[in-house]
Amino acid sequence: MLKKGEKGAVLQRDKKTYAIVPHIPLGVVSVELMEKLVKVVKEFNVQAIKLTSSNRIAIVGLKEEDIDKVWEILGVPPGAAVGLCIRSVKVCPGNTFCRFGQQNSLSLGAELDKKFHGLPMPTKFKIGVSGCVNDCAEVCIKDLGFIGKPKGWTLMAGGTGGARPMFSKKLAENLSTEEALIIAEKLINFYKENGKKGERFGRFIERIGIEEVKKII
Image 1: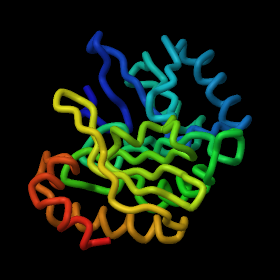
Image 2: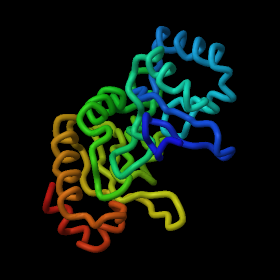
Image 3: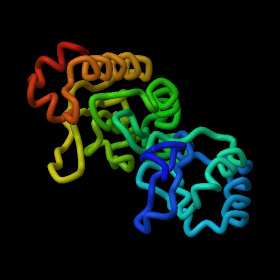
Protein backbone atom coordinates (compact mmCIF):
# COMPACT_ATOMS: atom_id res chain seq x y z
CA MET A 1 0.00 0.00 0.00
CA LEU A 2 1.32 3.43 -0.95
CA LYS A 3 2.04 6.05 1.70
CA LYS A 4 -0.09 9.20 1.58
CA GLY A 5 1.05 11.34 -1.32
CA GLU A 6 3.51 8.75 -2.68
CA LYS A 7 3.44 8.88 -6.48
CA GLY A 8 0.89 11.68 -6.07
CA ALA A 9 -1.71 9.12 -4.96
CA VAL A 10 -4.31 9.36 -2.18
CA LEU A 11 -5.95 6.19 -0.84
CA GLN A 12 -9.72 6.25 -1.23
CA ARG A 13 -12.54 5.32 1.12
CA ASP A 14 -12.62 1.71 -0.10
CA LYS A 15 -8.98 1.27 1.10
CA LYS A 16 -8.19 -0.37 -2.24
CA THR A 17 -8.11 2.27 -4.95
CA TYR A 18 -6.38 5.64 -5.29
CA ALA A 19 -7.00 9.13 -6.64
CA ILE A 20 -4.37 11.26 -8.34
CA VAL A 21 -4.46 14.96 -9.11
CA PRO A 22 -2.33 16.15 -12.06
CA HIS A 23 -0.90 19.64 -11.75
CA ILE A 24 -2.94 21.80 -14.12
CA PRO A 25 -1.84 25.41 -13.51
CA LEU A 26 -4.83 27.74 -13.06
CA GLY A 27 -7.19 24.97 -14.16
CA VAL A 28 -6.58 25.78 -17.83
CA VAL A 29 -6.70 22.45 -19.69
CA SER A 30 -5.15 22.00 -23.12
CA VAL A 31 -6.82 19.88 -25.81
CA GLU A 32 -3.80 17.56 -25.71
CA LEU A 33 -4.16 16.94 -21.97
CA MET A 34 -7.90 16.48 -22.30
CA GLU A 35 -7.32 13.76 -24.90
CA LYS A 36 -4.85 12.05 -22.55
CA LEU A 37 -7.39 12.20 -19.71
CA VAL A 38 -10.00 10.53 -21.91
CA LYS A 39 -7.48 7.82 -22.82
CA VAL A 40 -6.77 7.17 -19.12
CA VAL A 41 -10.46 7.00 -18.24
CA LYS A 42 -11.17 4.45 -20.95
CA GLU A 43 -8.04 2.34 -20.59
CA PHE A 44 -8.02 2.03 -16.79
CA ASN A 45 -11.76 1.95 -16.08
CA VAL A 46 -11.60 5.07 -13.91
CA GLN A 47 -14.50 5.38 -11.46
CA ALA A 48 -14.80 9.17 -11.71
CA ILE A 49 -13.19 12.38 -12.91
CA LYS A 50 -13.84 15.11 -10.33
CA LEU A 51 -13.38 18.85 -10.82
CA THR A 52 -11.98 20.05 -7.49
CA SER A 53 -12.48 23.31 -5.63
CA SER A 54 -8.84 24.17 -6.44
CA ASN A 55 -9.34 24.30 -10.24
CA ARG A 56 -7.89 20.83 -10.67
CA ILE A 57 -9.04 17.45 -11.98
CA ALA A 58 -8.97 14.42 -9.69
CA ILE A 59 -8.80 11.00 -11.33
CA VAL A 60 -10.54 8.68 -8.89
CA GLY A 61 -10.54 4.90 -8.57
CA LEU A 62 -7.14 3.78 -9.88
CA LYS A 63 -5.50 0.50 -8.95
CA GLU A 64 -2.05 0.82 -7.37
CA GLU A 65 -0.38 -1.14 -10.17
CA ASP A 66 -1.76 1.27 -12.79
CA ILE A 67 -0.60 4.56 -11.27
CA ASP A 68 2.86 4.67 -12.90
CA LYS A 69 1.32 3.90 -16.31
CA VAL A 70 -1.23 6.68 -15.90
CA TRP A 71 1.43 9.28 -15.05
CA GLU A 72 3.45 8.16 -18.06
CA ILE A 73 0.45 8.72 -20.34
CA LEU A 74 -0.44 12.12 -18.83
CA GLY A 75 3.11 13.44 -18.97
CA VAL A 76 2.52 16.06 -16.26
CA PRO A 77 3.67 16.22 -12.62
CA PRO A 78 1.34 15.60 -9.67
CA GLY A 79 -0.39 18.58 -8.09
CA ALA A 80 0.51 19.38 -4.49
CA ALA A 81 -2.82 18.10 -3.19
CA VAL A 82 -1.53 16.85 0.17
CA GLY A 83 1.25 17.71 2.60
CA LEU A 84 2.69 20.80 4.27
CA CYS A 85 3.19 23.02 1.27
CA ILE A 86 1.64 25.61 -1.02
CA ARG A 87 -1.05 23.44 -2.53
CA SER A 88 -2.87 25.47 -5.09
CA VAL A 89 -3.29 28.81 -6.81
CA LYS A 90 -6.97 29.26 -7.60
CA VAL A 91 -7.88 31.94 -10.12
CA CYS A 92 -10.92 33.28 -11.93
CA PRO A 93 -10.90 34.16 -15.68
CA GLY A 94 -10.07 37.82 -14.90
CA ASN A 95 -10.17 40.48 -17.58
CA THR A 96 -8.85 37.95 -20.13
CA PHE A 97 -12.29 36.38 -20.48
CA CYS A 98 -14.76 37.92 -18.01
CA ARG A 99 -16.60 41.19 -18.64
CA PHE A 100 -16.41 42.03 -14.93
CA GLY A 101 -12.65 41.54 -14.68
CA GLN A 102 -10.62 44.55 -13.56
CA GLN A 103 -7.17 42.91 -13.58
CA ASN A 104 -5.43 39.98 -15.30
CA SER A 105 -5.81 37.20 -12.74
CA LEU A 106 -4.50 34.55 -15.15
CA SER A 107 -1.19 36.38 -15.60
CA LEU A 108 -0.62 37.00 -11.88
CA GLY A 109 -1.84 33.51 -11.00
CA ALA A 110 0.55 31.91 -13.50
CA GLU A 111 3.55 33.70 -11.95
CA LEU A 112 2.48 32.74 -8.42
CA ASP A 113 2.00 29.12 -9.46
CA LYS A 114 5.38 29.00 -11.18
CA LYS A 115 7.20 30.48 -8.18
CA PHE A 116 5.42 28.84 -5.26
CA HIS A 117 3.44 25.70 -6.13
CA GLY A 118 4.60 22.83 -3.90
CA LEU A 119 6.91 25.00 -1.78
CA PRO A 120 7.29 23.43 1.73
CA MET A 121 5.53 25.45 4.45
CA PRO A 122 4.67 25.11 8.18
CA THR A 123 1.30 23.70 7.08
CA LYS A 124 -0.93 23.71 4.01
CA PHE A 125 -1.15 27.07 2.29
CA LYS A 126 -3.61 28.19 -0.38
CA ILE A 127 -3.47 31.17 -2.73
CA GLY A 128 -6.30 32.84 -4.65
CA VAL A 129 -6.46 35.51 -7.33
CA SER A 130 -9.75 37.18 -8.26
CA GLY A 131 -9.98 39.68 -11.10
CA CYS A 132 -12.74 41.71 -9.45
CA VAL A 133 -14.58 42.19 -6.15
CA ASN A 134 -17.01 39.36 -6.95
CA ASP A 135 -14.13 37.19 -5.68
CA CYS A 136 -14.88 34.03 -7.63
CA ALA A 137 -11.50 32.58 -6.54
CA GLU A 138 -12.58 32.89 -2.88
CA VAL A 139 -9.68 35.03 -1.73
CA CYS A 140 -11.77 35.71 1.38
CA ILE A 141 -10.85 32.23 2.71
CA LYS A 142 -7.36 31.85 1.26
CA ASP A 143 -4.12 32.13 3.21
CA LEU A 144 -2.92 34.71 0.69
CA GLY A 145 -4.68 36.33 -2.22
CA PHE A 146 -5.26 39.29 -4.47
CA ILE A 147 -8.46 40.99 -5.65
CA GLY A 148 -8.39 43.09 -8.80
CA LYS A 149 -9.77 46.62 -8.70
CA PRO A 150 -9.53 49.47 -11.25
CA LYS A 151 -6.36 50.93 -9.69
CA GLY A 152 -4.57 47.63 -9.08
CA TRP A 153 -4.48 44.64 -6.75
CA THR A 154 -5.75 44.55 -3.19
CA LEU A 155 -3.68 42.19 -1.00
CA MET A 156 -5.66 39.95 1.37
CA ALA A 157 -4.17 37.48 3.86
CA GLY A 158 -5.08 35.10 6.66
CA GLY A 159 -8.24 33.47 5.41
CA THR A 160 -9.06 29.79 5.94
CA GLY A 161 -11.98 27.39 5.78
CA GLY A 162 -12.16 24.23 7.88
CA ALA A 163 -13.25 23.71 11.47
CA ARG A 164 -11.99 27.15 12.57
CA PRO A 165 -12.81 29.43 9.62
CA MET A 166 -11.41 32.93 9.26
CA PHE A 167 -11.91 35.69 6.72
CA SER A 168 -8.80 37.20 5.15
CA LYS A 169 -7.76 40.75 6.07
CA LYS A 170 -6.69 43.60 3.82
CA LEU A 171 -2.99 44.41 4.05
CA ALA A 172 -2.41 46.68 1.05
CA GLU A 173 -4.11 48.00 -2.06
CA ASN A 174 -3.51 49.60 -5.48
CA LEU A 175 -0.58 47.26 -6.15
CA SER A 176 0.88 46.62 -9.58
CA THR A 177 1.38 43.00 -10.64
CA GLU A 178 5.12 43.37 -10.05
CA GLU A 179 4.53 44.73 -6.53
CA ALA A 180 2.05 41.95 -5.82
CA LEU A 181 4.64 39.29 -6.68
CA ILE A 182 7.37 40.93 -4.60
CA ILE A 183 5.10 41.24 -1.56
CA ALA A 184 3.80 37.69 -1.93
CA GLU A 185 7.37 36.39 -1.83
CA LYS A 186 8.21 38.48 1.24
CA LEU A 187 5.16 37.25 3.16
CA ILE A 188 5.60 33.62 2.16
CA ASN A 189 9.26 33.62 3.17
CA PHE A 190 8.50 35.38 6.46
CA TYR A 191 5.81 32.84 7.33
CA LYS A 192 7.96 29.92 6.21
CA GLU A 193 10.78 31.05 8.50
CA ASN A 194 8.68 32.01 11.54
CA GLY A 195 5.44 30.02 11.44
CA LYS A 196 4.92 27.05 13.75
CA LYS A 197 4.23 23.60 12.34
CA GLY A 198 0.48 23.22 11.80
CA GLU A 199 -0.18 26.94 12.31
CA ARG A 200 -2.25 28.37 9.46
CA PHE A 201 -1.22 31.77 8.16
CA GLY A 202 -4.26 33.48 9.70
CA ARG A 203 -3.40 32.17 13.18
CA PHE A 204 0.22 33.20 12.59
CA ILE A 205 -0.94 36.75 11.82
CA GLU A 206 -3.05 36.74 15.00
CA ARG A 207 -0.08 35.60 17.06
CA ILE A 208 2.48 38.14 15.86
CA GLY A 209 0.04 40.97 15.13
CA ILE A 210 -1.16 42.39 11.84
CA GLU A 211 0.96 45.53 12.20
CA GLU A 212 4.11 43.39 12.36
CA VAL A 213 3.03 41.66 9.17
CA LYS A 214 2.43 45.01 7.46
CA LYS A 215 6.00 46.02 8.30
CA ILE A 216 7.22 43.11 6.16
CA ILE A 217 5.52 44.58 3.09
